[in-house]
Image (cartoon, rainbow, N blue to C red):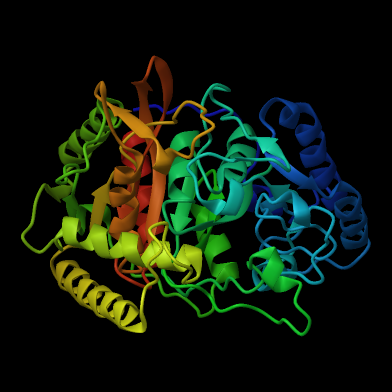
Length: 452
């Protein structure tokens, strides 16, 4: 079950180890990443805002200072999604009017990454307002999938996934409310993790018009939306989650063969294309042959049609910050409390499911990397087994973990052929709240069985 990989460059922990053991200097690691960006980014346009000069200055200063063993990311070059504030760099969300307005301070997550020793060499591209499974905007142009330039790298963290998949950097941090970490990982053949809601702070990930207000400190972390990392292996994801986390996370070591898994590959009104279905079924068959217990259905699974409708309503209110919908209607406080009640009930149902199962396996999206379009995926159509379906229907697979605030790790499982192109395919491993490290560990164990 091989999956396409575009680079053999060292990952996060391997780079940190090489620096710590003085096989390479921080300056050499950063210069190598910048060199790769110069060679590769002209073909994919993943980097929206380079910050090479300051990154080199930071690297030289780190090489001249004592090595700190308490910094797990010491000297690791990385990028971060354009929507996070980095002091001195613009945050535009794809809007031209903000391109010349530098952020006054680092986002809290950026501060944590720097405190852990990471060197940020730039920010990666996004769609306008972070609302598409593509990544293009009038400020920075269109990011291409490094596996196939005719296809999208996903969105809204598409630049993040493309930078990691191509080998420019070993990791990035994105955000996810509608699959915006998981779908780019799936489209680009890398690892991604949607964190438990509230685990990693998003202070400093604010629409730029807000963060420029006098006296503004930080907006509240919005419901549903999370910050989560992308990398090229599971251990790198784990350390990035731990660096960003608000609270320490515990590991609950348990061999995968002792776990009980539930695989969901079919849902009403959420068809999955053969390009995703076939590698997913092949992966499940491989796991079963290896002795992993997998159920294919359960009455404990919350009603996904009902969950999707509530999720979509809540997400639309969150993304619009309560502004009227296209039909002119504005959600009332009562509407919002009804949604909060529905979310609480959904969380309780998932808690009950996880008393019987350790993890749930599911596709991250119903298709592989989509062709480029000037229309947002959610406003257009998806081709599934030769039939056009609403693009918004794909959000059922994202909302499965998003609405109840669950962690979900996407790992590459193989490849499929979608609309004539061979492309990577991923699978999401969903687990109980606050069991992020266990999700990542389970995904790693699955990857070992599938790929050796």
